[in-house]
Image (tube, rainbow, N blue to C red; front, side, top):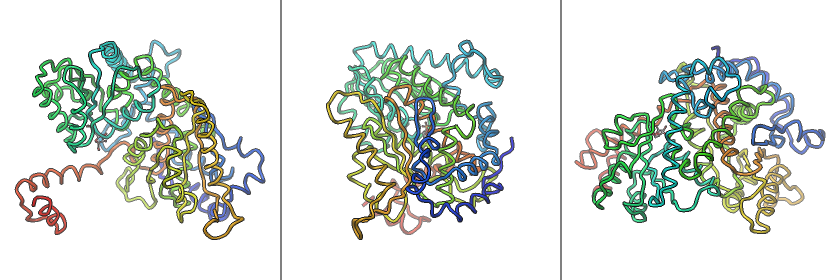
Length: 522
Ligand code: F6P
C-alpha cells in the first residue's frame, strides 16, 4: 500500500495557491448568486443520509483539487487495505475491521468480494457471537423481573451504547431502565445503586481490555454491593462484554460475550459492547442498526470519490483545518435524542486523529484533529451561538436535522426545523444593514445533514458515516487513526499519585502537584 502524506503531494501546493488566490476571500453569498445549481452540485445523497455541503467555503475548482489530494495521498489504497483486513493499525500490529461486525454472513451475500473470503473465519465468529448476544438480549427483554440494566464501562465501552440507547429512545420497549456508569467518581455509581434493587438488576461490565481502572473499580464496587445486599446469583445478574474473557471469568463472571482486538474501543458499539442497545431495541432493531452501517460501508467502499459522502466530508475537514486554519467544529443535532452524539463524536474524532506525528513517527508540520463540541439545538442557540455568529473565530457547524418526528405534539417540529434552517441561513447570510454590535459578517460555513427519521437504520448509517470521514482526514494526514497512546501517560502517573495520596510522600514531585496533593490530603 502506497500512502503519501497530503502535504507532500502536488495537489497540496495547488490548493495552497488556490487558497491564496481565491479561497481566503471566498464568499458564499456571491457563490450562490453566480451559480443557481450550487445546491445540487454540492449536495450528496448517501444511504439513509442526505448532505447539503453547499454552504461550505469551496468551489468546484477547490473540490476537484481536494479530490486530487485524496488520490495522490493513496486514500483509496488505504481504504481498500482496511476493507481487506490488512494490519493498518501498525503501532499495535492490528487489523481494523469494525466494518466486518456489520457485514452480513457469507451465505447471505449474493457475491462476496474476495477480501471477505479471506476473513471468512472472523466473519463466522462475528455472527456466532452476534446470534448468542442477541438471543441473550431477547431473553433479558422477556424477563419482566429484570427492570434495570446497568452498563459499567468507559470511553468506547460507554459513549457508543449510551448515545445510541438515548438516540433510539422511541424504540426502547417499556419496562426496562438503562443506566450508564463510567466515571471512577463514586458519586456516579452510588447514585445508580440508590435507584436499583439486587433482584431486578442486570450489571453489564463492558471493557475491551478488562483492565481499565475506572471500570474495574466500579465493577468491584457493584459486585461488593450485590453481595452486601444478599445477592448470590452472579451468573444471572452479571455479564461481561470483553475481548479478555479469561479476566472476566477470573473476576467471577461466567456469562460473557467476546469481541476481537481488531475492533477499536471507539468503534465497538457494533460488537458485544452494543448489548445494552440490543436489550433496549431488540434483536431486530440491532440488526437494522448494523444494516444501516453496512449500507454506509458499501457506499464508502465503492462510490466514486467525487460522489462519496465520507470522502467529501473528510476532505472539507482537511481544507478547513489546514488551509483556513479553523481549529474546531461544532456539532448541532436538532433532535434532543441525539444529546450524547457530540460527546460520542469527540472520542471518535479526537482520540483517532489527535496525533502530532505521522505513521513513521515524524512530527507533522500541519494541524490534525479539530476540537469537536456541541449541544442539541435549539439549546445551543441560547448558549454559544452568539460566538458562532459574531465571535472572532470562524467555527464550521455541522447541523443534523430529522424530517419526521416521533411525537405528535403540534407545532414543535415545524418550529425546530425552522430554527435549524434559520441558523444555517443566518451564519451564511449575516446582516450588514446595521453597524457595530448588530452587524453579522456572515459567510460562516456549515454542513447540513438530513435523516428522514431517526431509526436504528439511519442512526447506524450516520455513525458509520462519521467513522469513515475520520478515516479520510486521518489517512490524508498520514497518521495512524487507530491507536491512542496519548491516554497512557496520565494512567501511569495516576497510579503513582494514588500511592502518594495515601502516604503523603511528595519527594521528586513538581512544585504544583506537590502543593495540591498536600492541600487535598489535609
Ligand atoms: O481512554 C482510552 C481507552 O483505551 C479508550 O480507547 C477505550 O474506549 C477506553 O479506554 C475503555 O477501554 P476498555 O474498553 O478496554 O475498558
